[in-house]
Image 1 (tube, rainbow, N blue to C red):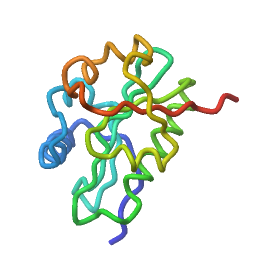
Image 2: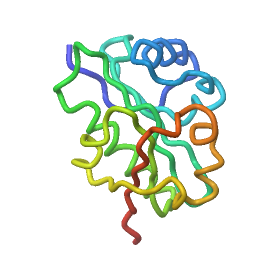
Image 3: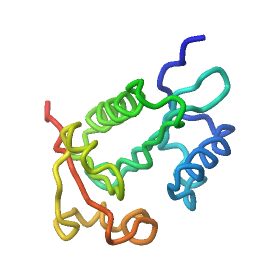
Length: 148
């Protein structure tokens, strides 16, 4: 059976999202309150890849892009990121930021550039992800979005 299309996660899938994040050592503390900002790819009824786009003023915060280990190498993470960047552009966001402890090189290949945390817009810097969930040692990256 082919994988389903990327879609915003329904509320009844938040448990699967939480388990996928936990199993990959990603924060889950705010999944319930931010769940509507996550999209995913399913194999049947099983969530196999996910990622989030948290609004932050005129910007977006890319959250917790994750793929089940047995589904890696198929371009699912790239598809999730591209979908979320397209959504951010449609929403009129100026740029998208992210924090990562392990995937700096990967996101640089997708067009994100390193940025000092002190340079991040206040709306992004005040998100729970920046304030409490990701350590100060996490790399910060951003990509500006094309304007129409």
